[in-house]
Image (cartoon, rainbow, N blue to C red; front, top):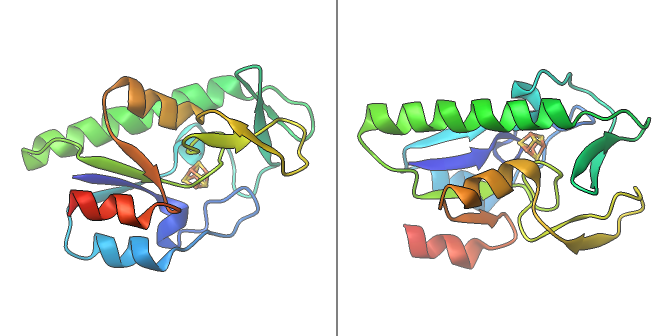
Length: 150
Ligand code: SF4
């Protein structure tokens, strides 16, 4: 089973109320068992919401509000639901395809906390949790990596 950031599938769950629809991800999904996930929405954050970035491991929104607990709670709930669905299907979670650079879903590179578009090495809170569980994580910027999991 595959986990896909819901915004990549065209769901309007991004902070600004839009999505990050990705054509190859949508095509990849067509013949797979998958679950769409949005850990920020599951963490009770509204849509739209102020953008947030990670600063010293804390999720801080553009108004200076610390919403780390929402991020962690949403990530844990997402993982729990994903594990439940995988168990129902009798499968493991083969791969998570998550939105690049997000403070939740980003894998390998995230914004640096200055809200100026600068990227630094690091993972979003949900992506890090997936990796800790041993689940492979890639972003929509790695279509060739996904081919290995078909
Ligand atoms: S990047 Fe992740 S948390 Fe952000 S809108 Fe997309 S699915 Fe939700």
